[in-house]
Amino acid sequence: AFTWPEGTPALDAETLTLAAWVHRQSKAIGLASPVERTEGQSRDWPVTVNHQEAGAAEERRDLFIPLQTPTRQSGVLYVGPAYGTAGHSPHDVGLLLALANQTSIFLERKHLQAVALKAEALREADRLKSTFMSAVSHELKTPLASITATVSNLLEEDVAWDREETRRELQAAQHDLDRLDENITELLDISRLEAEAWQPTLDWCEVGEILSVALFRLPPDQRERVSHLLSADLPAIK
Image: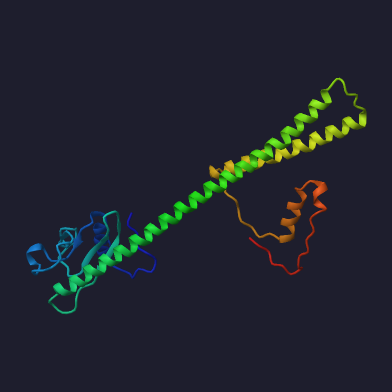
C-alpha cells in the first residue's frame, strides 16, 4: 500500500492521487514520449503517460517518476513544474532519472538489510527457543525423577519407614511437585505469549520489589545464599 512518509510537504489532493497511481502502476507521468526523446537518451526510460491518462483534470507540467527495482516498488519521486515555459529539459530529465535510479538502489539496499536483520533475529530466536526447551526439559525431568524415586522408596515392602522418615520423604516429594508446577506454569505462559493470547502491561516498578519477588521464588535453603544492597534513591523502572 502507498503511504506518505512523515514530514511530507502538503500537496493537493490531485497530486497525491497521481503519485498513488504511479506507485500502483509502476509508470511515470509527464516524461517525454518515445518520439519526443532526443537521440542518445537511455533505453531504460520508464514507461510514461500524460497526466490526463492517469486521471488528472487537465494537463500539468510536474513529473512523477516511480522508484523501482526489478524486485519491488519503493516509492515515487515527485518533481514540481520547472521555472519558465519550456518545462524540464531533456538534460534535466536525464539527471532526474539517474537520481531516481540511485535512490531506488539505495532503498532496495536498505530493504535487503532490514530483511537480513529480521532473518538473523528469527534465527537467534529459534536458537534461544531450542536452548530454553532443552533447559525446561531438564527442569521437568529432574523433579519427576526425584518424585518417582521417593514414591518407589516408600512403596518398598522390605524397608520399615517410621513416621518421621516418611514425613521427610513426603515433604521432599511436595517440594518437587511445587517445582514441577512452577515449570509447567512458565511453559503455559510462554505458549500464551507466542500465541499472543495476552499482552504484558508495562508499569513502573521499584527495583527492590522485583528482587523481592525473584528471591521469594527461590527455595528457602537457597535464599540465604543471595544478598543485595540497593541505593535508597534508585528510580523506578518500566
